[in-house]
Length: 354
Image 1 (cartoon, rainbow, N blue to C red):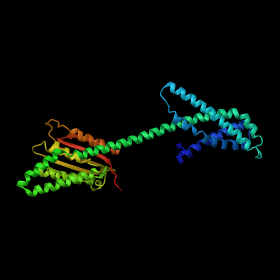
Image 2 (image 1 turned 90 degrees about the horizontal axis):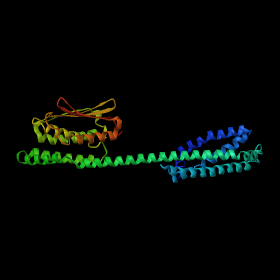
Image 3 (image 1 turned 180 degrees about the vertical axis):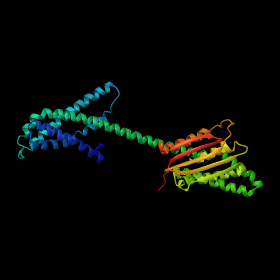
């Protein structure tokens, strides 16, 4: 189906576009001595006929997409010229037929003679209007191709995000699991209560992470709950070396963000911060709402003299890409070290389920 016929808004705009052409045709007729009545009775239905008759240009353009070679444009030009000549002549013939059908109306007795005299002008005008319809058809086809390409691009981006999320779900830091299991094994003999507590926390963490991984967007409070469970496990493992500080604005907790966006940040804070320092340190998580945006920060101490650990930038790069992929230019990602503290800052619009 022609795209104009499938969309009422487009069809209405297209038909309105023929109104100035009808007025122009009436003005030309008046300049040749026609009465306003004669000009209006012929021009309005004739332009309505042209509006639907010249829709056929779209099918020709779809069958002959624009090529990049001069030879291709030459062949297309011959087809456009022949079609324009045929359609222009057909339109002029319909004008002649319409004039003869209306000659019985009082005041229109001279209309057939006037139209017969104007047939060359009408044919030329029909050719120009058909060529304009050809140009419009190519513009619509180009627009439709652009929309389709954008749609496919969005689908590919969504598939990429889903694949990335599945990979993120599957790549739970194996060192974290191994270390947790080793800690449970060691605690079983000396402190069965803490070993049991760690088992429960580890089970809860795995259940939560798998549950969140099934969704594209989650509330910040759910991400925080997962991070709390993870850090509680690590606190049992590191003991006094790991200290935690939570500064959370309740207004920020319903904010929606991509799934498992916070988890890699706290994992990095442990793996590249606390674990690398014999004395350990403080991991601070803060969230607040400022002027309709959520500001989420994760701080951890670092050893500036230690070599840069492998893989530090990969997780942060994924977090940045997923954040900007969801919110675009409305979001901001910052990561850096100042005063021996590594800070990651996420800024994104406050959007909730409601």
